[in-house]
Length: 416
Image 1 (cartoon, rainbow, N blue to C red):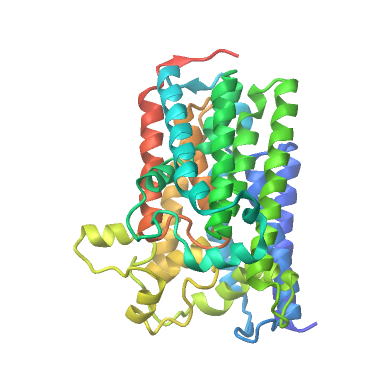
Image 2: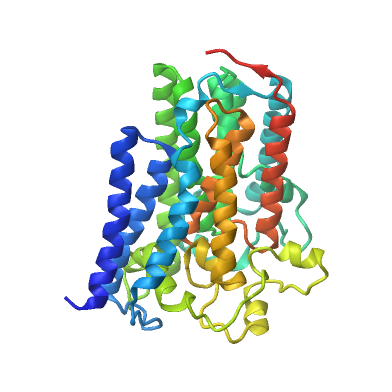
Protein backbone atom coordinates (compact mmCIF):
# COMPACT_ATOMS: atom_id res chain seq x y z
CA UNK A 1 0.00 0.00 0.00
CA UNK A 2 1.52 3.33 -1.05
CA UNK A 3 1.27 6.49 1.07
CA UNK A 4 -1.41 8.14 -1.07
CA UNK A 5 -3.82 5.22 -0.78
CA UNK A 6 -3.10 5.11 2.93
CA UNK A 7 -4.02 8.81 3.33
CA UNK A 8 -7.30 8.38 1.42
CA UNK A 9 -8.22 5.36 3.59
CA UNK A 10 -7.17 7.19 6.77
CA UNK A 11 -9.30 10.17 5.77
CA UNK A 12 -12.33 7.90 5.33
CA UNK A 13 -11.62 6.19 8.66
CA UNK A 14 -11.72 9.58 10.44
CA UNK A 15 -15.21 10.39 9.09
CA UNK A 16 -16.53 6.93 9.92
CA UNK A 17 -15.21 7.17 13.49
CA UNK A 18 -16.69 10.66 13.86
CA UNK A 19 -20.11 9.32 12.90
CA UNK A 20 -19.84 6.33 15.25
CA UNK A 21 -18.74 8.48 18.20
CA UNK A 22 -21.62 10.89 17.68
CA UNK A 23 -24.11 8.06 17.24
CA UNK A 24 -22.93 6.38 20.42
CA UNK A 25 -23.45 9.65 22.25
CA UNK A 26 -26.98 10.48 21.02
CA UNK A 27 -28.21 6.85 20.60
CA UNK A 28 -31.01 7.99 18.26
CA UNK A 29 -31.29 9.21 14.69
CA UNK A 30 -30.85 12.98 14.69
CA UNK A 31 -30.23 15.56 11.98
CA UNK A 32 -26.54 15.41 12.81
CA UNK A 33 -26.63 11.64 12.23
CA UNK A 34 -27.79 12.17 8.64
CA UNK A 35 -25.04 14.70 7.92
CA UNK A 36 -22.23 12.66 9.46
CA UNK A 37 -23.41 9.44 7.81
CA UNK A 38 -23.54 11.14 4.41
CA UNK A 39 -19.96 12.40 4.68
CA UNK A 40 -18.79 9.00 5.96
CA UNK A 41 -20.35 7.31 2.91
CA UNK A 42 -18.86 9.92 0.59
CA UNK A 43 -15.43 9.35 2.13
CA UNK A 44 -15.73 5.59 1.59
CA UNK A 45 -16.61 6.26 -2.05
CA UNK A 46 -13.45 8.35 -2.42
CA UNK A 47 -11.37 5.30 -1.52
CA UNK A 48 -13.06 3.26 -4.25
CA UNK A 49 -12.70 6.10 -6.73
CA UNK A 50 -9.01 6.66 -6.01
CA UNK A 51 -8.13 2.99 -6.34
CA UNK A 52 -10.19 2.39 -9.51
CA UNK A 53 -9.39 5.68 -11.29
CA UNK A 54 -9.05 6.84 -14.04
CA UNK A 55 -12.64 6.39 -15.26
CA UNK A 56 -13.00 9.11 -17.85
CA UNK A 57 -9.34 9.85 -18.49
CA UNK A 58 -9.91 13.56 -17.77
CA UNK A 59 -8.75 13.92 -14.17
CA UNK A 60 -5.80 12.15 -12.64
CA UNK A 61 -5.89 12.04 -8.85
CA UNK A 62 -2.26 12.11 -7.80
CA UNK A 63 -0.07 13.75 -5.19
CA UNK A 64 -2.49 13.20 -2.30
CA UNK A 65 -1.19 15.02 0.79
CA UNK A 66 -2.43 15.18 4.36
CA UNK A 67 -2.83 18.94 4.95
CA UNK A 68 -5.83 19.47 2.60
CA UNK A 69 -7.64 16.61 4.35
CA UNK A 70 -6.89 18.14 7.78
CA UNK A 71 -8.01 21.62 6.67
CA UNK A 72 -11.23 20.24 5.17
CA UNK A 73 -12.03 18.10 8.22
CA UNK A 74 -11.52 21.01 10.64
CA UNK A 75 -13.86 23.32 8.70
CA UNK A 76 -16.44 20.58 8.21
CA UNK A 77 -16.39 19.69 11.90
CA UNK A 78 -16.79 23.35 12.84
CA UNK A 79 -19.69 23.62 10.39
CA UNK A 80 -21.28 20.38 11.63
CA UNK A 81 -21.20 21.44 15.29
CA UNK A 82 -24.43 23.53 15.34
CA UNK A 83 -26.47 20.68 13.81
CA UNK A 84 -24.92 18.13 16.16
CA UNK A 85 -26.76 19.85 19.01
CA UNK A 86 -29.91 20.46 16.92
CA UNK A 87 -31.87 17.58 18.44
CA UNK A 88 -35.49 16.62 17.85
CA UNK A 89 -36.38 16.57 21.57
CA UNK A 90 -36.23 20.38 21.52
CA UNK A 91 -39.39 20.53 19.40
CA UNK A 92 -41.46 19.26 22.32
CA UNK A 93 -43.64 22.22 23.21
CA UNK A 94 -42.37 24.02 20.11
CA UNK A 95 -43.62 27.56 19.67
CA UNK A 96 -45.67 27.84 16.49
CA UNK A 97 -46.59 30.84 14.30
CA UNK A 98 -50.19 31.97 14.15
CA UNK A 99 -52.35 29.32 12.52
CA UNK A 100 -53.86 31.81 10.08
CA UNK A 101 -50.52 32.84 8.58
CA UNK A 102 -49.50 29.19 8.18
CA UNK A 103 -52.82 28.36 6.52
CA UNK A 104 -52.43 31.21 4.05
CA UNK A 105 -48.87 30.15 3.18
CA UNK A 106 -50.01 26.54 2.69
CA UNK A 107 -52.89 27.52 0.41
CA UNK A 108 -50.64 29.83 -1.59
CA UNK A 109 -48.08 27.05 -2.11
CA UNK A 110 -50.76 24.62 -3.30
CA UNK A 111 -52.28 27.13 -5.75
CA UNK A 112 -48.90 28.15 -7.21
CA UNK A 113 -47.65 24.59 -7.67
CA UNK A 114 -50.90 23.36 -9.20
CA UNK A 115 -51.02 26.40 -11.47
CA UNK A 116 -47.45 25.80 -12.58
CA UNK A 117 -48.24 22.14 -13.21
CA UNK A 118 -51.20 22.86 -15.47
CA UNK A 119 -49.51 25.77 -17.22
CA UNK A 120 -46.14 24.21 -17.95
CA UNK A 121 -46.09 20.45 -17.51
CA UNK A 122 -49.42 19.26 -18.91
CA UNK A 123 -49.20 21.69 -21.80
CA UNK A 124 -45.80 20.38 -22.92
CA UNK A 125 -45.39 16.81 -21.69
CA UNK A 126 -47.11 13.48 -21.42
CA UNK A 127 -47.10 12.01 -17.90
CA UNK A 128 -45.79 8.76 -19.36
CA UNK A 129 -42.77 10.60 -20.80
CA UNK A 130 -41.65 11.65 -17.32
CA UNK A 131 -40.03 8.23 -16.88
CA UNK A 132 -38.87 7.86 -20.48
CA UNK A 133 -35.05 7.91 -20.48
CA UNK A 134 -34.70 9.28 -24.02
CA UNK A 135 -37.21 12.10 -23.49
CA UNK A 136 -35.62 13.07 -20.18
CA UNK A 137 -32.13 13.24 -21.64
CA UNK A 138 -33.41 15.62 -24.35
CA UNK A 139 -35.13 17.79 -21.75
CA UNK A 140 -31.85 18.27 -19.88
CA UNK A 141 -30.39 20.16 -22.82
CA UNK A 142 -33.45 22.03 -24.03
CA UNK A 143 -35.42 23.26 -21.04
CA UNK A 144 -35.31 25.77 -18.17
CA UNK A 145 -37.73 25.97 -15.24
CA UNK A 146 -38.21 29.71 -14.98
CA UNK A 147 -38.33 30.29 -18.74
CA UNK A 148 -41.08 29.45 -21.19
CA UNK A 149 -40.43 27.99 -24.63
CA UNK A 150 -40.49 31.50 -26.11
CA UNK A 151 -37.82 32.71 -23.65
CA UNK A 152 -40.05 34.93 -21.51
CA UNK A 153 -40.12 34.68 -17.73
CA UNK A 154 -42.53 32.19 -16.23
CA UNK A 155 -44.03 34.03 -13.24
CA UNK A 156 -45.46 30.87 -11.67
CA UNK A 157 -42.09 29.19 -12.04
CA UNK A 158 -40.43 32.04 -10.15
CA UNK A 159 -43.12 31.96 -7.43
CA UNK A 160 -42.73 28.18 -7.17
CA UNK A 161 -39.04 28.58 -6.42
CA UNK A 162 -39.82 30.94 -3.53
CA UNK A 163 -41.41 28.07 -1.61
CA UNK A 164 -39.13 25.23 -2.74
CA UNK A 165 -37.15 25.13 0.51
CA UNK A 166 -40.15 25.07 2.84
CA UNK A 167 -42.31 22.41 1.17
CA UNK A 168 -41.44 19.54 3.52
CA UNK A 169 -41.52 21.67 6.66
CA UNK A 170 -44.96 23.03 5.76
CA UNK A 171 -46.25 19.52 5.02
CA UNK A 172 -45.03 18.17 8.37
CA UNK A 173 -46.42 21.20 10.22
CA UNK A 174 -49.89 20.66 8.77
CA UNK A 175 -49.73 16.91 9.40
CA UNK A 176 -48.76 17.46 13.04
CA UNK A 177 -51.57 19.99 13.48
CA UNK A 178 -54.15 17.62 11.97
CA UNK A 179 -54.85 19.79 8.91
CA UNK A 180 -55.23 16.87 6.54
CA UNK A 181 -56.67 18.81 3.61
CA UNK A 182 -53.70 21.19 3.53
CA UNK A 183 -51.24 18.36 4.18
CA UNK A 184 -52.55 16.38 1.21
CA UNK A 185 -52.44 19.53 -0.91
CA UNK A 186 -48.77 20.02 0.01
CA UNK A 187 -48.01 16.41 -0.85
CA UNK A 188 -49.50 17.23 -4.24
CA UNK A 189 -47.12 20.21 -4.46
CA UNK A 190 -44.16 17.92 -3.72
CA UNK A 191 -45.31 15.55 -6.47
CA UNK A 192 -45.51 18.52 -8.84
CA UNK A 193 -41.94 19.44 -7.85
CA UNK A 194 -40.84 15.89 -8.71
CA UNK A 195 -42.61 15.96 -12.09
CA UNK A 196 -41.15 19.39 -12.80
CA UNK A 197 -37.62 18.19 -12.09
CA UNK A 198 -38.12 15.20 -14.40
CA UNK A 199 -39.69 17.31 -17.12
CA UNK A 200 -36.70 19.67 -17.17
CA UNK A 201 -34.18 16.86 -16.84
CA UNK A 202 -32.87 18.20 -13.53
CA UNK A 203 -31.29 15.60 -11.27
CA UNK A 204 -30.09 18.27 -8.86
CA UNK A 205 -33.67 19.29 -8.09
CA UNK A 206 -34.59 15.65 -7.42
CA UNK A 207 -31.70 15.36 -4.97
CA UNK A 208 -32.85 18.59 -3.34
CA UNK A 209 -36.31 17.11 -2.76
CA UNK A 210 -34.82 13.93 -1.30
CA UNK A 211 -32.36 15.72 0.94
CA UNK A 212 -35.04 17.70 2.78
CA UNK A 213 -37.07 14.59 3.65
CA UNK A 214 -34.96 13.38 6.61
CA UNK A 215 -34.70 16.85 8.17
CA UNK A 216 -38.45 17.44 8.30
CA UNK A 217 -39.25 13.90 9.42
CA UNK A 218 -36.63 13.80 12.19
CA UNK A 219 -37.49 17.25 13.52
CA UNK A 220 -41.26 16.74 13.63
CA UNK A 221 -41.29 13.04 14.52
CA UNK A 222 -41.60 13.63 18.32
CA UNK A 223 -44.88 15.49 17.66
CA UNK A 224 -46.46 12.58 15.72
CA UNK A 225 -48.50 9.79 17.22
CA UNK A 226 -47.89 6.18 16.15
CA UNK A 227 -50.59 6.25 13.47
CA UNK A 228 -49.28 9.49 11.99
CA UNK A 229 -45.75 8.07 11.92
CA UNK A 230 -46.89 5.07 9.88
CA UNK A 231 -48.78 7.29 7.45
CA UNK A 232 -45.81 9.62 6.99
CA UNK A 233 -43.46 6.67 6.49
CA UNK A 234 -45.71 5.23 3.78
CA UNK A 235 -46.02 8.60 2.04
CA UNK A 236 -42.29 9.23 2.11
CA UNK A 237 -41.51 5.73 0.83
CA UNK A 238 -43.90 6.15 -2.11
CA UNK A 239 -42.37 9.52 -3.02
CA UNK A 240 -38.86 8.15 -2.66
CA UNK A 241 -39.60 5.28 -5.06
CA UNK A 242 -41.02 7.77 -7.57
CA UNK A 243 -37.94 9.99 -7.30
CA UNK A 244 -35.46 7.12 -7.61
CA UNK A 245 -37.27 5.74 -10.67
CA UNK A 246 -37.13 9.14 -12.34
CA UNK A 247 -33.51 9.72 -11.28
CA UNK A 248 -32.51 6.35 -12.71
CA UNK A 249 -34.33 6.99 -15.98
CA UNK A 250 -32.79 10.44 -16.30
CA UNK A 251 -29.25 9.21 -15.57
CA UNK A 252 -29.60 6.28 -17.97
CA UNK A 253 -30.94 8.59 -20.68
CA UNK A 254 -27.89 10.85 -20.38
CA UNK A 255 -25.15 8.25 -19.93
CA UNK A 256 -26.57 4.78 -20.56
CA UNK A 257 -25.19 4.34 -24.08
CA UNK A 258 -21.64 5.38 -23.23
CA UNK A 259 -19.35 2.36 -23.37
CA UNK A 260 -16.43 4.02 -21.57
CA UNK A 261 -17.91 3.85 -18.07
CA UNK A 262 -20.78 2.27 -16.18
CA UNK A 263 -23.59 3.94 -14.28
CA UNK A 264 -21.82 2.83 -11.09
CA UNK A 265 -18.73 4.74 -12.22
CA UNK A 266 -20.83 7.85 -12.87
CA UNK A 267 -22.57 7.59 -9.50
CA UNK A 268 -19.30 7.15 -7.60
CA UNK A 269 -17.71 10.04 -9.48
CA UNK A 270 -20.52 12.45 -8.59
CA UNK A 271 -20.69 11.18 -5.03
CA UNK A 272 -17.04 11.04 -4.03
CA UNK A 273 -14.71 12.89 -6.41
CA UNK A 274 -15.05 15.88 -4.04
CA UNK A 275 -12.47 14.68 -1.50
CA UNK A 276 -9.90 13.99 -4.22
CA UNK A 277 -10.60 17.20 -6.15
CA UNK A 278 -10.31 19.23 -2.97
CA UNK A 279 -7.05 17.57 -1.99
CA UNK A 280 -5.41 17.98 -5.40
CA UNK A 281 -6.51 21.46 -6.41
CA UNK A 282 -7.96 23.69 -3.69
CA UNK A 283 -4.75 24.50 -1.81
CA UNK A 284 -3.30 26.13 -4.93
CA UNK A 285 -6.10 26.64 -7.47
CA UNK A 286 -4.32 29.25 -9.57
CA UNK A 287 -6.35 32.28 -8.48
CA UNK A 288 -9.57 33.47 -6.82
CA UNK A 289 -13.05 34.37 -8.10
CA UNK A 290 -13.63 37.05 -5.42
CA UNK A 291 -17.20 36.04 -4.71
CA UNK A 292 -18.31 35.79 -8.34
CA UNK A 293 -19.93 32.38 -7.81
CA UNK A 294 -20.76 32.22 -4.10
CA UNK A 295 -22.21 35.72 -3.55
CA UNK A 296 -22.68 37.42 -6.94
CA UNK A 297 -25.55 39.56 -5.61
CA UNK A 298 -23.14 41.15 -3.13
CA UNK A 299 -20.74 41.91 -5.96
CA UNK A 300 -23.59 43.57 -7.85
CA UNK A 301 -24.53 45.54 -4.73
CA UNK A 302 -21.02 46.99 -4.62
CA UNK A 303 -21.07 47.77 -8.33
CA UNK A 304 -18.74 44.96 -9.34
CA UNK A 305 -19.09 43.04 -12.59
CA UNK A 306 -20.42 39.49 -12.29
CA UNK A 307 -20.47 36.63 -14.74
CA UNK A 308 -23.77 35.31 -16.07
CA UNK A 309 -22.85 31.66 -15.52
CA UNK A 310 -20.23 28.98 -15.72
CA UNK A 311 -19.01 29.60 -19.28
CA UNK A 312 -18.53 33.33 -18.81
CA UNK A 313 -16.86 32.74 -15.44
CA UNK A 314 -14.26 30.51 -17.08
CA UNK A 315 -13.41 33.39 -19.43
CA UNK A 316 -13.16 35.85 -16.54
CA UNK A 317 -10.94 33.59 -14.44
CA UNK A 318 -8.92 31.56 -16.98
CA UNK A 319 -6.05 30.87 -14.56
CA UNK A 320 -8.16 28.66 -12.29
CA UNK A 321 -7.01 25.05 -12.42
CA UNK A 322 -10.39 23.80 -11.22
CA UNK A 323 -13.86 25.32 -11.45
CA UNK A 324 -17.47 24.66 -10.45
CA UNK A 325 -17.89 21.97 -13.08
CA UNK A 326 -16.24 19.70 -10.48
CA UNK A 327 -17.41 19.04 -6.93
CA UNK A 328 -15.13 20.31 -4.16
CA UNK A 329 -17.68 20.57 -1.32
CA UNK A 330 -19.21 23.87 -0.25
CA UNK A 331 -15.86 24.52 1.46
CA UNK A 332 -14.03 24.32 -1.86
CA UNK A 333 -16.52 26.69 -3.45
CA UNK A 334 -15.76 29.31 -0.79
CA UNK A 335 -12.01 28.67 -1.01
CA UNK A 336 -12.08 29.31 -4.76
CA UNK A 337 -13.91 32.58 -4.18
CA UNK A 338 -12.21 33.93 -1.05
CA UNK A 339 -9.16 31.86 -0.17
CA UNK A 340 -8.30 29.53 2.71
CA UNK A 341 -8.07 32.03 5.56
CA UNK A 342 -11.33 33.90 4.89
CA UNK A 343 -13.20 30.63 4.38
CA UNK A 344 -12.02 29.34 7.74
CA UNK A 345 -12.99 32.58 9.54
CA UNK A 346 -16.35 32.77 7.75
CA UNK A 347 -17.53 29.33 8.83
CA UNK A 348 -16.03 29.69 12.30
CA UNK A 349 -18.08 32.86 12.86
CA UNK A 350 -21.41 31.57 11.53
CA UNK A 351 -21.03 28.20 13.21
CA UNK A 352 -20.45 29.96 16.55
CA UNK A 353 -23.56 32.11 16.06
CA UNK A 354 -25.74 29.14 15.14
CA UNK A 355 -24.34 27.03 17.97
CA UNK A 356 -25.54 29.67 20.41
CA UNK A 357 -29.00 29.74 18.78
CA UNK A 358 -29.44 25.96 18.76
CA UNK A 359 -28.34 25.53 22.38
CA UNK A 360 -31.73 26.82 23.57
CA UNK A 361 -33.98 24.24 25.22
CA UNK A 362 -37.12 24.81 23.10
CA UNK A 363 -37.30 25.81 19.45
CA UNK A 364 -39.82 27.82 17.46
CA UNK A 365 -40.58 27.39 13.75
CA UNK A 366 -38.11 30.12 12.88
CA UNK A 367 -35.37 28.10 14.57
CA UNK A 368 -36.47 25.03 12.62
CA UNK A 369 -36.15 26.91 9.32
CA UNK A 370 -32.76 28.25 10.39
CA UNK A 371 -31.73 24.67 11.08
CA UNK A 372 -33.05 23.70 7.64
CA UNK A 373 -30.98 26.45 6.04
CA UNK A 374 -27.76 25.19 7.63
CA UNK A 375 -28.74 21.58 6.94
CA UNK A 376 -29.22 22.39 3.25
CA UNK A 377 -25.77 23.98 3.06
CA UNK A 378 -24.14 20.95 4.70
CA UNK A 379 -26.15 18.17 3.07
CA UNK A 380 -26.08 19.38 -0.50
CA UNK A 381 -22.65 20.81 0.26
CA UNK A 382 -21.05 17.46 -0.53
CA UNK A 383 -21.24 18.84 -4.08
CA UNK A 384 -20.87 22.64 -3.95
CA UNK A 385 -22.47 25.63 -2.17
CA UNK A 386 -26.19 25.11 -2.67
CA UNK A 387 -27.07 28.82 -2.56
CA UNK A 388 -24.44 29.95 -5.07
CA UNK A 389 -25.06 31.92 -8.29
CA UNK A 390 -27.66 34.67 -8.53
CA UNK A 391 -30.57 32.22 -8.43
CA UNK A 392 -29.16 30.53 -5.34
CA UNK A 393 -28.58 33.87 -3.61
CA UNK A 394 -32.21 34.76 -4.25
CA UNK A 395 -33.33 31.38 -2.82
CA UNK A 396 -31.27 32.17 0.27
CA UNK A 397 -33.05 35.50 0.65
CA UNK A 398 -36.42 33.75 0.31
CA UNK A 399 -35.56 31.35 3.13
CA UNK A 400 -34.26 34.15 5.35
CA UNK A 401 -37.54 35.96 4.74
CA UNK A 402 -39.54 32.94 5.89
CA UNK A 403 -37.36 32.64 8.99
CA UNK A 404 -38.18 36.27 9.81
CA UNK A 405 -41.86 35.74 8.98
CA UNK A 406 -42.21 32.68 11.21
CA UNK A 407 -40.49 34.40 14.12
CA UNK A 408 -42.52 37.57 13.60
CA UNK A 409 -45.84 35.68 13.84
CA UNK A 410 -45.03 33.33 16.74
CA UNK A 411 -46.88 34.69 19.78
CA UNK A 412 -48.35 31.46 21.10
CA UNK A 413 -47.13 28.20 22.59
CA UNK A 414 -48.68 24.85 21.64
CA UNK A 415 -48.67 22.53 24.61
CA UNK A 416 -48.10 18.88 23.92
